Length: 120
Image 1 (tube, one colour):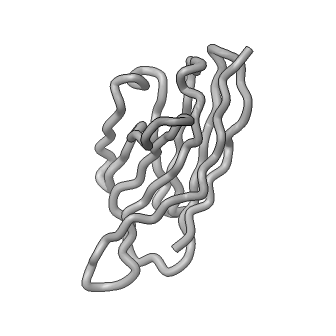
Image 2 (spheres, rainbow, N blue to C red; image 1 turned 45 degrees about the vertical axis):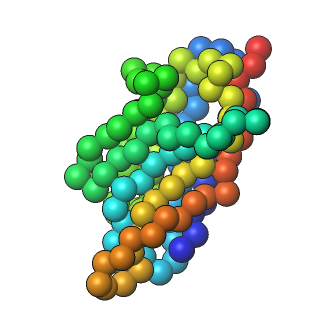
């Protein structure tokens, strides 16, 4: 299974970006999908996750500014980021819990990371 992320870049404070991540390969079922981020010298932290049923969880620091969604017809998860601030600068990684066959045994798959830089 491969996860390909895109959409990162340089944006000014207050700006917006939309990240996308598509899973491909041997996929029977995808459970939770999500975004994590890692700033230099810091651990990788959860930003937002979305379950198959559409239940979302957000880190407190992004509530009201970020929105996660998924398109299961394309095995894709999105992260719409608004009101970006310098403290949002990090490498953003997508994650999906994927089962390749039955019986369903989900394991973590990670994307390669996409850099988001918020700076004036």
